[in-house]
Length: 176
Ligand SMILES: [Zn+2]
Image (cartoon, rainbow, N blue to C red; front, side):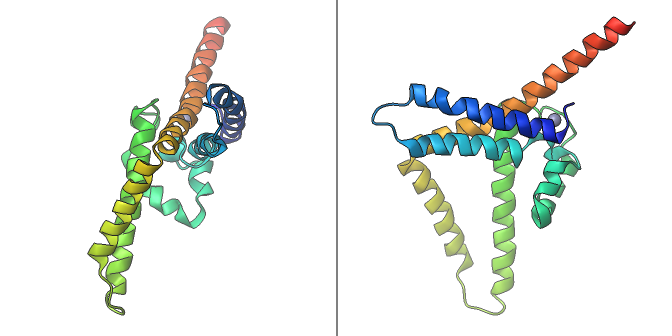
């Protein structure tokens, strides 16, 4: 497999190439915030939400003190399995996992706060949840481009892994 640095480079090159491609297909008048959402999501997906979060990898440590949020993921998901290294299922699963962990964390923190403050944590949870869905509904194009970017970021990684394995297999065969 290519190392973390190579994957980072591939992500940056991929996102750089994706920008003019997006621009070519963008409807006029061009809404550049959609391009930013697409390129930003591609970079975030490749550099932070990488498939190699299933391993004690440089990506895992990139999360700093928040890396522990990914610890259960790393333990549960077998390395390079379809659950982490596939084109559609894996990136969607990572987003769902991340949202779930954030939700669980929010529930725990607000539960702790109820001992010191009066807060309606159930209402607050619903409000945040509703707010997120409303944003996605009113910014449908942004949401779609963000999903496309997250899928592309993962695809660049998985594609590179597949090419690398195929290349190594060929070289090994030639040596024989
Ligand atoms: Zn990988």
